[in-house]
Image (cartoon, rainbow, N blue to C red; front, side, top):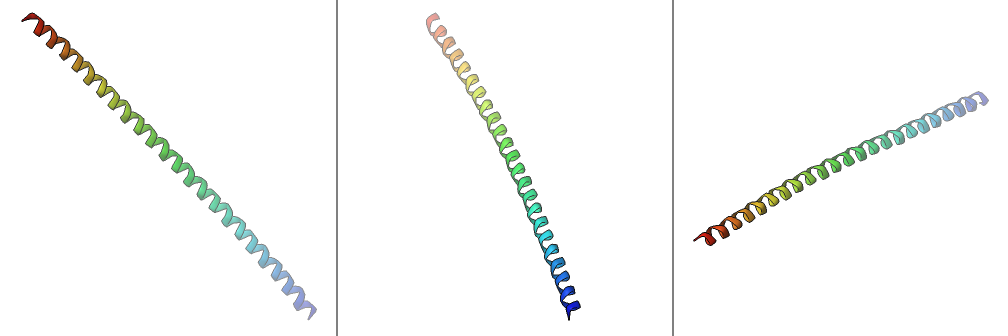
Length: 84
C-alpha cells in the first residue's frame, strides 16, 4: 500500500505541476495577445489622427484659396466700378 501512496503522490505532484505550467503559459499567451491588440489599436489611432490632420490641412488650404479668390474678385470688381 505504501508503494501505491508514493506513486499516487508522485502522479499528483506531476499533474499539479503540469496544470500550473499550462496555466502560466495561457496567462503569458493572453498577455501577448492583449499587448498585440493594444499595439494594433494604437497604430490605428495614429493612422486616424494622421488622416484627420491631412484632411483638416486640405480643408484649410482650400478655404485659404477660396478667400484669396474672393478677395481678388472683390478687388477687381471695385476697380471695375471705379473705372466706369
